[in-house]
Amino acid sequence: MDVAVGVLIDRNGRFLLTSRPDGKVYAGYWEFPGGKLEAGESVEQALRRELHEELGITIGAAQPWQVKIVDYPHARVRLHFCRVFDWRGAFEMREGQRMAWQTLPVQVRPVLPGTIPVLRWFAAERGHAGATHVE
Image 1 (cartoon, rainbow, N blue to C red):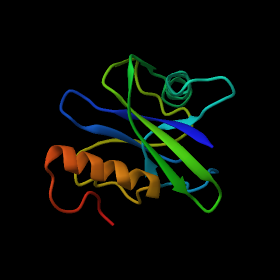
Image 2 (tube, rainbow, N blue to C red):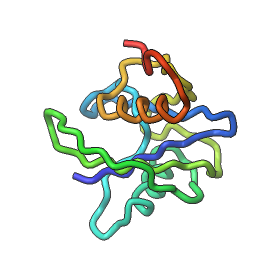
Image 3 (cartoon, rainbow, N blue to C red):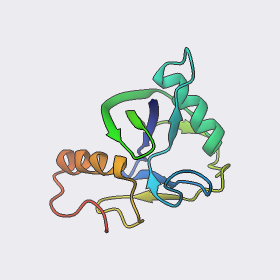
Image 4 (cartoon, rainbow, N blue to C red):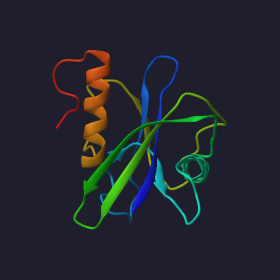
């Protein structure tokens, strides 16, 4: 299963995490927002659609960053992480999820397992030593 994931980064270098809504696998866990690619969609098209459906925003360019395969108990997922620095609109949590702008170490918890590698990539890029998140 292919999933487009948005790593939204604001002007202060903070990144957006959202909680998984009730009724979904790993409900309450924090992750970068996004969703499954539909038939015929590119990663950027899926990300644009998902972020509008889930958060009510319209993104500018999505910069492909990393691809990571994660084996969850319910599915094997290929995560296509894209950095997003430009968006329009007010954030609306349309699925009842929560949102939090974070820096390292991330203070929200629990963090979805597929999110932890991204936090490590941020740590490497930013020269952050120590924990990337609170357990």
